[in-house]
Amino acid sequence: MSGATLAEALAAARRRLSEAGIADAAQDARLLIAGLLKLSSTAFVIDGARPLDPSQQALIDGALARRAVREPVHRILGRRAFSRLDLVLSPETLQPRPDTEILVDTLVPYAQKMVAGGGCRILDLGTGTGAICLALLDLVPGATGVGADYSAGALETARRNADINGVADRFEAVESDWFAAVTGAFDIIVSNPPYIVRSVVGTLDEDVRLYDPILALDGGEDGLDAYRAIAAGADDHLRENGLVAYEIGYDQKETVTAIMRENGFARIEAVQDLGGNDRVLVFSRETSV
Ligand SMILES: C[S@@+](CC[C@H](N)C(=O)[O-])C[C@H]1O[C@@H](n2cnc3c(N)ncnc32)[C@H](O)[C@@H]1O
Image (cartoon, rainbow, N blue to C red; front, top):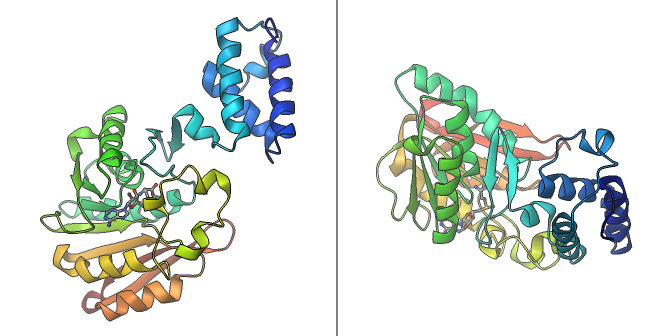
């Protein structure tokens, strides 16, 4: 393959991934080559005749070998776009999903209103790459935030992402089992916790099951362990008129609402994803509704 042009390398990559049974072979080939060679979206059209040098070809070959055994494209590239951010990934972090941007977008108007009213302190429980908290800090400049996670490795990545995305002065990372090491009170407590039913984790696609950390996926016997833990601790860490917001699994709207109701919270908003699945719930204290 040495001496191939960019267009030839793309065609060969598409073929190789397709033969390996990758469903979106064409898209993945394009994303991988563009990401590895730092190409703009038009490069394949205007620069297709450009010959690749051997080191570029070696990079592409290495990445294709990894994708062929189901390693996700963004894990291979080591980073993923989320909201307006560029996030670094590590083995300890879930790669943030586009659906989670709905949680961020739902909270922005609330956070802006809080900032206008005097301030907005956000707690992101199970922060992973920092995606939710960092995106909110980016979109709401007056807000400050704490990202908590059980995984020290994830927190290292979250700190790095805060630096890369210019919000490190408003972000703090705390190693904590949910609220255990969290101090103080917050205007918004947000979480995209592990919510997959334990018996289902083993049946997930290889791309997820083999490459996202189990700590980010396993929600316990019924998928609801984290919601119970967060619901039980939220009141002690929430300022007056504060909000709790979650990403949920497609069938968890009523069960999570019931868990929150048992802990004194009322649902004030429910948002669906583009596929029409329930995805985001927002709660306030029952007494402030
Ligand atoms: C589904 S991932 C979400 C990551 C990130 N917030 C996002 O939306 O991309 C859940 C996160 O919860 C963390 N986690 C799991 N159990 C935890 C616990 N007991 N205390 C704190 N964090 C926990 C995992 O390490 C993981 O980072």
